[in-house]
Length: 401
Picture 1 (cartoon, rainbow, N blue to C red):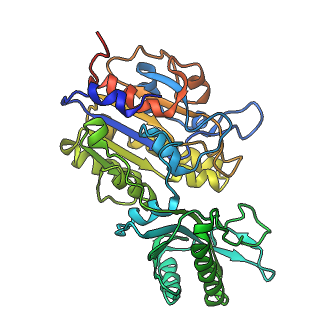
Picture 2: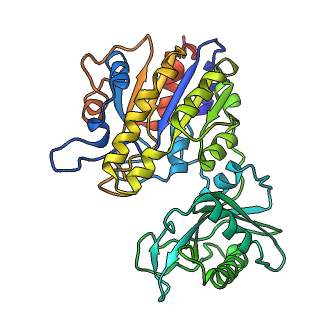
């Protein structure tokens, strides 16, 4: 793991360009014992061609056996030690929709969910309700008033929304309400410190009011809150890497993370091809571009093996739009694994491909978990991806005499 203090004096300003393509939740597991993973099942001739001339490995987002959230996993990809640079999902959701998160604000990621007559969660995502329904429900929750603070309820996408409390003395040292499994009721918010008790009381009052307001709604008749956070003020890409960075992502959380790190977030359409065409239109404006594809993760969480295979194949079919730009370095990976068999994020290392003119090559390799396990890159921590890409792009000077 290379720290910023080591890299900073080595940074060179060159015209070379780096492209980082992240297929969210890319890593998988075989559907049947001894079979192939989603990535190995998919027909990916364009990625395979890059693999044959590039280098392959398995990246570890956090630590062996540790299942990462999307925020820390992405920070790791961007070279930020996720154990040092910590941020909750709420701040990322708020920043991702352009909410002006202030120093006094505490933000949380909200899910509309479904509970039964006994108050037990039966669907943690309320059937992935449509955006329009999510907006309507957020307007209902915007009626909630709490003593001494401003309350903002902002729609994000589908069942996702953001809660922002603004006022003096608020703390983000709070537990989450999502039980993580079905058949149990939402949890009460607990204060991790004595100073956070007032904020915990306010959030629990918000939840109580939300329960009453949503009681007659279906399927979204309750809320779950997680990822309480404040704005962390991390060092930005231009400062630590000397890069003019652009970001293309559809989902607000990933747009928020890119914005937090000083990337210019670009407007794009909803499809994979739209995202890749957006990169092409702005190619001359940046020397680093991050592109995020969400639906690999969505299909994995839904347990849809074939759907995840299809998304990977769609990415591969659109890939010539990116390779035609002739990036000096292209990295293709995921932030974490989301095997369809697991229906959730998992701790499994993530297949990773880097292609540049300076690679030693992986003759005959196909981009997949087993090929990556045998690749020349080996197993490595994801925080080293950025320094590896900078090296291949000729953006790092020699260290020492």
